[in-house]
Length: 324
Image 1 (spheres, rainbow, N blue to C red):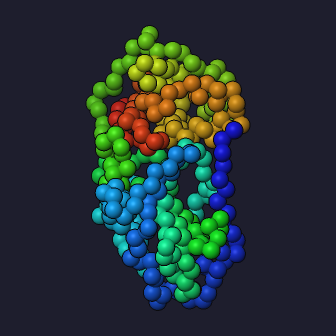
Image 2 (tube, rainbow, N blue to C red; image 1 turned 135 degrees about the vertical axis):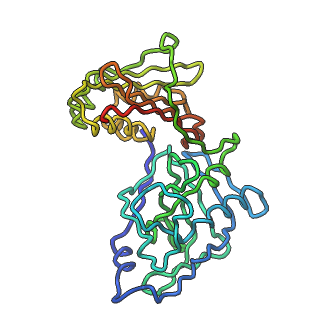
Image 3 (tube, rainbow, N blue to C red; image 1 turned 90 degrees about the vertical axis):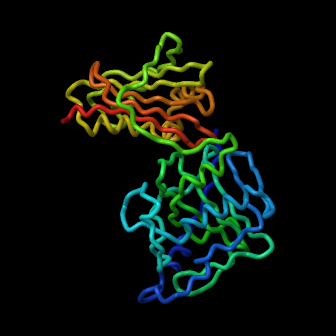
């Protein structure tokens, strides 16, 4: 059973952050300049790597985090150009409405640890609290040349089991590149023709119950077939969704997006152990190809590769607009 770490977002702390009359624009926030932590920790599951101030990795991670620190987008888009970010004046603008309250062992975190001298954090009402840890939750994918919206959490110095809030942050490509030990860099692009796969070299590990699960859970009423193929040798997986010609663009896109973040599938397994058993046979960091068909016509093909520690570094897309 997967380990859960519940992130307690106390109602009292939320009320304190939003309490007070008028605006907080007049407050001088001490955290506008991100102070250097005593060490940087990268954590995933039970694995943890620590970097001190003398290491090159520490410097690179800190510098790239600083690039987008205390900045926000004035749009609702999750992926934007780096130069679209603007400095914020109000802490309230950084508050996130994310409903995520726990993390799983597949999530990757960058922890800024302040042991010797706690970080000074100014709240919206002007009060200052001491922070011992900033926990940056990495998104699972990134788009070349852009920043991807995520969040971070700050923890009190006197009680690290209680946090002072969840805030938005935009993660840029340079940070993902800095974290890669395999030398991966974020790349993405489109192709005019799809990649061909010879499925005779793949094992069919399809769970037949998946088809009805997609129809009943997500309302994909025009889904006619679903299949999952795996090549253990090359660590490649091909996922096929086949719809009737009556399927709407919304249905086709929903099937395409369902697999974009691999861990999305995990949330479904928790209540479907048979499906989880099938997915658990897939090699770690396998290349995932998602193909959506309207009967025998390939509508889209999305390849997610160079996966390292749960982060997708390479995305290759092909799409045919059948609704033109």
